[in-house]
Image (tube, rainbow, N blue to C red; front, side, top):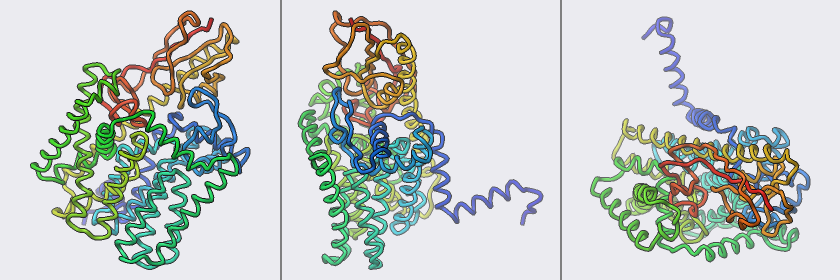
Length: 557
């Protein structure tokens, strides 16, 4: 045995590593916090402001979270009509802000709790499904879609944390016939739905698992009434407050939005394949260890056929006409690459039930296939957030397939997981730069023009709107009451913007340019990146030459 005094560093490192292996949950918690700590100062962006404004309303009127108006689509409307999410996440933020304030660090810090809960929940579930639960948990943490969503204060990861633990307690409750675990599962299902309505998919998923596991509709079915009752109570409450049941109104909005945008079904399926492969990148990086070369070649041919059919249908020219020729070629290559990963995701689910056909295999397969179908058919657009719920299931499926013919994790598999982690960090950093450019541009233009005692109007929303309003700007209505000499700011890369007023009514003053991550983007039309909305681009994130953020100032005549 080595003398500890002669090699203290080696001895201490070995002891730390042994302790980590004996306490994987502490290791996962530490890795999660350390990995996301650099993004605690990330400015609020995309839909973050909706949850923050509702939380601010809750602090003033706890029983009426949506009783205020907002300009989110270019006109003023009630908050209950503008937001499509239930208020539970905003209640959480309201409590957190009462402790830490409304600053970015405090709110991002409290949002680490559901991230850690999701990772630990995946580890707990994977312990009963595979021999490598630590790998499954790490594959979840470093899935780009999950990691990127963990840097926001939106409801997606919180919903997923309730989702995972509902599955954990449901599986264990059925196996052990434990009343309290089934009750906990039903309660967690209800919390998932009240955090984000997509959580309603848990009810048919766990009902199917219960029937396959028990082969009879037993008392376990009664616990499914808990989330149904919670949703019914929520609908009654919102109807009493606003005259409309909120979940029903949100579903109607999704239906009308899908009709309005009119995306071809084949293109939406391809978008879902592409986003699945990118947001769950480990499935592609580990593909050489999951499938034989001939099978991978077949997957590639299938992906190429889907891409060719979509291109023949005018996907790039009709849906993304702003892409230049070079950007279009680059985007098509990346679509092909990530859509192979999407096919791998579906193949993992189908191969699982084909080879094992037990209740747990069906649970994982239905979890993945159901999420995919929801994104491709039901939901009104494709984005990384709608793909998110399948992340733990795919991570466990990868671990289960790897262990079929392997006794240890090879260096190649570990390197694949490391590459996935690197991609996630790049994506998070690019999104951080995008959010920071929105805040900096808002503060810069307001500081410049507000001093002239002229009202500063602006188009665009998301985090840009949040910081513009905080700096004294006013969101432009379609029928604004403007005064000669007022300033209008129009950002290029943003939502719900329109061309500037007629040249006879406005004069261009200057254009501002804000640098972003130069060769990788999560939301940028010029390279086809649309993590938060496939209407911006057919890729969840994209490599390419990313131009700086641009906004133009006009003076109204």
